[in-house]
Structures are given as structure tokens and as C-alpha cells.
Amino acid sequence: MTTENRDYNLPDQGELDWHVPINENWQLIDEDVQAALDAASGGDESVTGIDSARTNVGALVGGTYHDSAYSGGGYGVVFAASDLHIDSVVVDADLEGISDADLTIELRQYRGGADDPPVVASQTTTLSGGPERVDLGFTVPESGASDADPNDEYVLQRGAPSGDPIPLRRRFADENDWSTADYTDERYSDPDVDFLQGTINTPTATWDEPVGSWYYFFDWLVGSSERTVTAPVSTDVDEIYMRPRDPEEEFENVSPRALWIDTSEYQ
Image 1 (cartoon, rainbow, N blue to C red):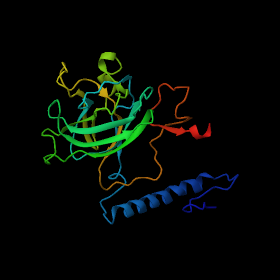
Image 2: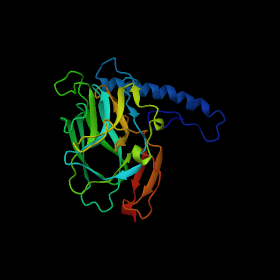
Image 3: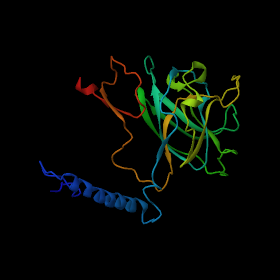
Image 4: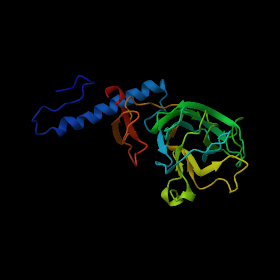
């Protein structure tokens, strides 16, 4: 028999060779995916599932909470890239005692570690607390563009706080929760992005830039800003939690790819 949705095969109850109709589904799924790609490409035959894929890059988890923020932002992750679309990132915020949960995220030129480099893109989002994925939609300029960094180096950083600085997870070398050995894949080739670790854009910093730390932004979803097909169902989830928005119980070591289902209205 077939299901009501796209005529995929559904084995009859008790069927011994149930794997046969299930395996036939792969051909049907492949045809449906190709049809979706064709529709999204507008007839551009160069679009394929591989070309259209976006990839998760960068550190997956944070270490300690940290709430310092300069008036111009300051703390961020330095990376080298050109014509790169940053779809979203994961942040982990502690909102206890925070009256204004708005967080500004900026994409800036790095300018060799300048104190206040030019802003390429900026967005303010209201956080809900804990690990969560934040949509950005930033595009790193193409090499040589008028708003591009001369060395194609950029920093993704927090902007000036709206009120009290929001404590965010970070990995910090001086607190022994970060080391180069923790992350063997700091450089990616598809898409091309090279993480140069952390930076603090302030004249009061006394150490060499960039510093060996990951500040605030984890599990980046990156790829091309064009020719990209977005699936109706995300597979970017490896844990599911159901809890009220302000739980009495806190969870430790939660994956940044966790799906949180707010149960507050059911209390």
C-alpha cells in the first residue's frame, strides 16, 4: 500500500519482506528532492543538492559564562572568508537578573585587530535563554568589494549592550576550558572559512590579537546565500528537551543543537 503523502510505500502489517517497499522509497524521495531543487533553481541546471547544501562549522559548545561588553562591542570570533553567507549561529545566554534580553550581533571587518573596525552587518535579537539558534542572514563581502576587509578577515561579535550585559557562554584559554587541541577543524574548505579564534576590539586589551579563545558564537550554519534549497524539516537537532521557559531545574552539558519545546502554557 502507499501513504496519502506523495505515494511513498508503507509495508502492510506483518509483511515479511517489508524492506522491499521501504527501499523503493529512496528512489521516490530522490525524485522529489530533485523536483524541489529544480523548482527552487528557477531552471538553473547548475543547482544540485550538493551545491545548495549549507554546513555547520566552528566550535559546538561553550565553556563559562561571561558578561563583559564594551560600548563598541569588543568580544568576538575572528575568521577569514570571502562571499560567505552566515545563516545562523548558536548562543547560550544566562538571563537571570537581566531585564533586557536584546542582544546585538555585528559582522565587522577585522582590520588587523583595530579597536573599532567598520560594521558590515548588524542585527538585534531577543534571547529566550539557554542554548538557542539565532538567525542572522549575514553575507561576508566578496574579496575586493567596497565593504570588504583588505585581508578578507572579519569578526563576528556582540554589539553594545541594551542594558546590563548579558552573560553568554564562551571558551576561554585562561580558564582552561579551551585549547587548540579541542578543535581540529578550524579551517574548512567547503565552504571556505578559516577560524582565527577570538578577539577583543578595545584599546585596553594587553595581549596579542587574535587571542586563543572562542567568544559566544558556536555551531555556525554557513554556505552560499544563493542557489540554496531550505528543507521544510530541519535535521539540525540531536537532542529534544521539553521544559517551561523558566524552569526550576537547569540542565548541564546541553548540546547547542538541542531542540527546546516550551511547555509554559501547559503548566
